[in-house]
Length: 549
Image (cartoon, rainbow, N blue to C red; front, side, top):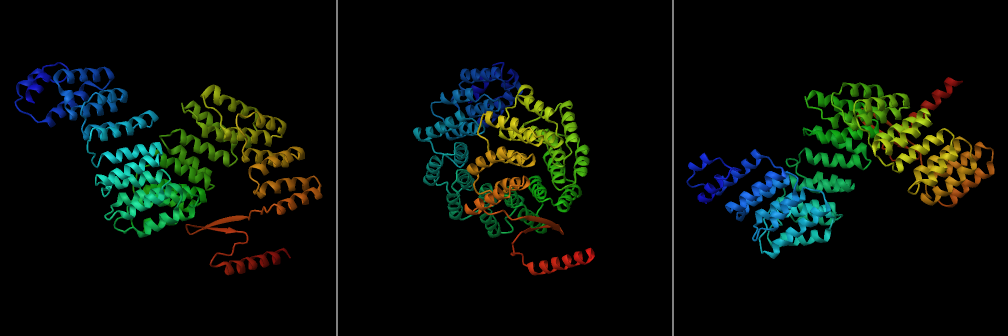
């Protein structure tokens, strides 16, 4: 081995000649360390990588699988997987470590060709009778998730059992993640239940799987079953985030508060999920407490957390505070600008939203799809039809963004609010995709405002095909008939609604008391103190009547 190193050191690419004079007997690890150091020293562009490869061939190092594995890793880091794979395929007898390195390099790239190539490399294991290890299967299972091929995943699962790795924590975690991502939560739970010794990563993998698909009752049950000394911030975050994404913001905040009571320090992802839940509920008081918590702990606010703070204040009704927070941030990205523009537009401050958009462009920010949805919405609120149409056209011509159905929806809403109903209908007919319920609903609402019965009827006919059970559509047309004094037609629409079994959606309201949001739905008597609430409402009603008298 040491003669080979001396020969290698004599080449001008890797080691300087004086070093060779001090070499007598060195280990393979030393060779690898020198090789890796030389790659870092000389750079990892394609030219230097090819020079290194030539040196490996000349000195015979290309027959050493460990050296080749380090070279494949260097190629991967340089972004040249094609060359790395070419070198790998020329190895006559690749060992487990080299195959693992190649599969890992391919698993880090989200490309269809890379995924299929990784499967080929994995198949080569069996052709060469190589024995995989605990690192092989997690890499392969990542590829299975990318391909969403549960059948191949089951084959891999079977091979983990054959080689005795089905009790490895890393392998079991990979299996749970694979089944959860490929629609096999039942299989994921079975793998979990069969695992005798579980660490926190195994628990969290299944919690994340439940949270991803919105199975929050199962997730909460699993969290309760999890030993308290095992639960960590990630465990709680999986449940909080899952509740928030499932539209169950109130429960997300309850779990978050319980997490704090158990003295578990939340991380950035936890706080993002909690702030998102506060924004959805409009829970300003709790949102401010979370902000204070971050500041008191001296936690560094990342851009994503700052964006969540702006969103929380804007959705909770305090747009002034949202603007103050925005102006105080030194670092902003496109999400920061878009969030404040959306907040301004939602609060009806269309002019300020347009000014903020111009600030963003002047500051070098590049608007994205969501930014244009916000700014087109702002134009709708202000009634700037020509500017809105101009911005819509600039999406493709200036920014290279192809409008999607949401952008068309904003444009149609803009035209509908301005009374340009025929132009809006013409755009609907000429769109490159079928109009959805939101677009026809927008046109129906505009027809109601501008008393265009003919267009309203056409819009309702389309809506009945798309969402026949939405009571709001029928009510809009019934109200339009009523506004025009056509009472018989209004009654007919209501009868048609009853005849088809469509029920009017119950009204709903909410109120925040002591950091908890309470929801009230018309006709709902499930609240434990419903009788007391009704008594209080009757007392208020009597007081109001007596004051009026």
